[in-house]
Image 1: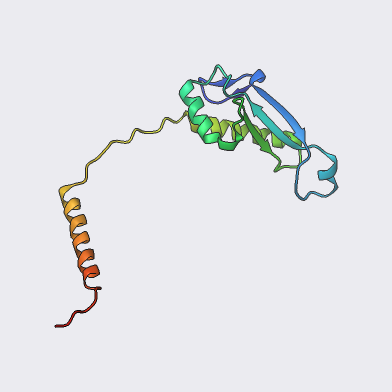
Image 2: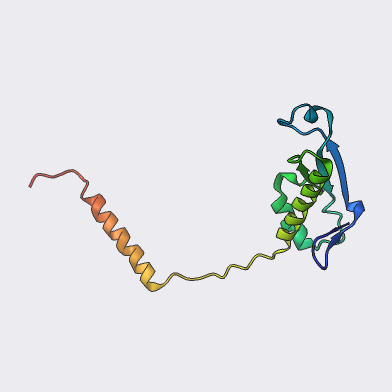
Length: 139
């Protein structure tokens, strides 16, 4: 059971983990021991997450979100299974906590009269510069 905040906890049935060999350097240890962890969280089926949090979580997870609504998080930084498991759980908790934050609604604003005038003055200046680039006529 993983605790996200005071209201949300994830049950054991929502999580599954599998271990595999890590990639990269590590000597003989990397070839023999399966220390990398792949944590799978059934986010779409989770009864503990509200619908709006699930939508934000799907957007934040990106490629880690599968077609059947699960989030797959891998961790292979450390040389031991327990530390990689802790790191994967910490990544999942951080992702869910980020999804819990409701974004502020954007308030539409209108440009001020002065900013409109500055924009038009800039356009006039630019058109004068471009007009002076033309061919010189016989005078």
